Image (cartoon, rainbow, N blue to C red; front, top):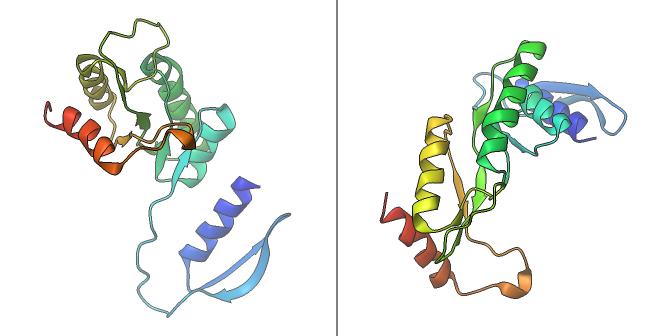
Length: 168
């Protein structure tokens, strides 16, 4: 269903008149705006780390947006899969634009599958450097807690971001 909606959106952004016939969405001869020069469409970011999501990112998006993945997995499995699907589909490799949740700790996090963005300021700065080496075009730093009950004032989120940005 997601693939089909992305294909339909792409059809709508491609020309002044669009048609699409699928299982979940169908339309015929829809006028999408004035004729002539078409403005560029907003970039499409597709998230997910399952093979189907990575393939979807290659097929339909401008950027792959994996969320909270360990750097080792990204380097050794995620990016090779992205390149492999791009080769198979004859498409360009989408930009790497991941999201990481910032969780600054006072002690080092030593888990082998530590999510990027979790740990001491030094560990997080190392993660940012690794994302740069891996070719990240953008990196979303997420300060939002997982549980809505843990919401905090925006000033706290800005302080978390400042702690990292001031060290870059």
